[in-house]
Image 1: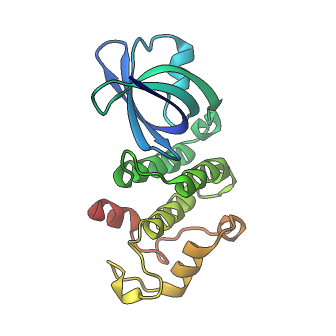
Image 2: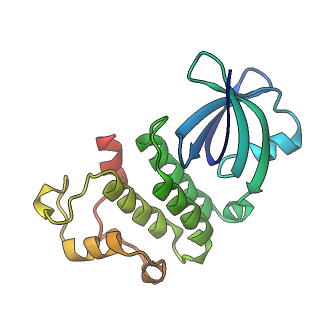
Image 3: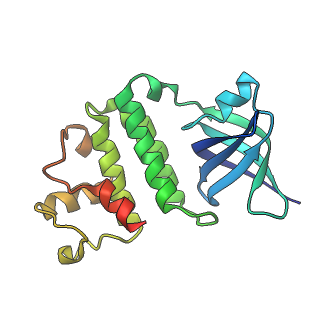
Length: 197
């Protein structure tokens, strides 16, 4: 049996039988890993394996693609994201976008570090949904869906291409902080993401 140790962000938790959970974990070098955690009735394990937690785990793999949870450590709970519905909803959009696009075994260290940075920055945004939209824009760029030198190839009409390009290419959150409702500037990126993946 192979054993791995990795860190990751919990994207989704599915109840299985009475006290077990199937956990989808986004990792920097293994992509999205799915593992089974048995006997998750202790509060400590429930906190460790809750969505959006940043954890380090030891997993064991038998013959299937599913890993089995051995032990874990909580690195960051991100409880502050549960302080308001807009924060939680925006964080959920980040996780949902990654579940739609990232595959098992596909390393994505840059995307992983962007996710961690965005989760930490969400409370600084007056409208957290703005950061979620911008994250999806970065994700579409990362996946090669957007060719910035060829606006005509963008899958949906975009009335303000220079602004869109500038937002996608910026490496500073400061540029994004002051942004408000982006519905007129940006196309419906989440709908595009769902249609493409």
